View 1 (spheres, rainbow, N blue to C red):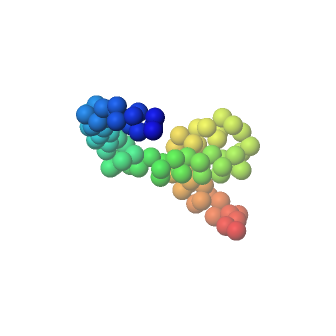
View 2: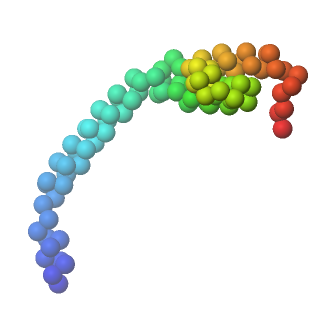
View 3: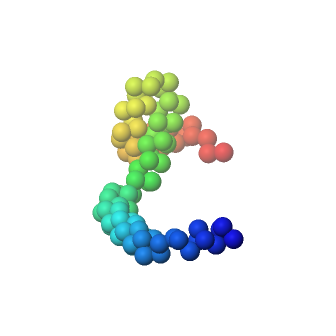
Amino acid sequence: MAEEEDFEEFDTEQEETTIEELEERLQELESRLGQGIGNGGAFPVGIYGLGSILAAILSWDGNRAILWAAIHCIFSWLYVIYSVIVRWESMRFL
């Protein structure tokens, strides 16, 4: 019985305005994200991140130096392509 009384005292108008405010904020955030580099930008972040990881791994495998791995991580896919061209015959794919 006490639970029913608590439920009746709840203000539905306040809940609706809170939901509307949250929906507006969510739409605003989604529009901001749509303008970013990762969502609809010219160069998706996911692909750049994958290239950076591959570049760091290939650099570490070839040089065993953290500084070179960090530098090659910045160049991302350029270093990955260069590394594949230079080390094609010694590459292990499986």
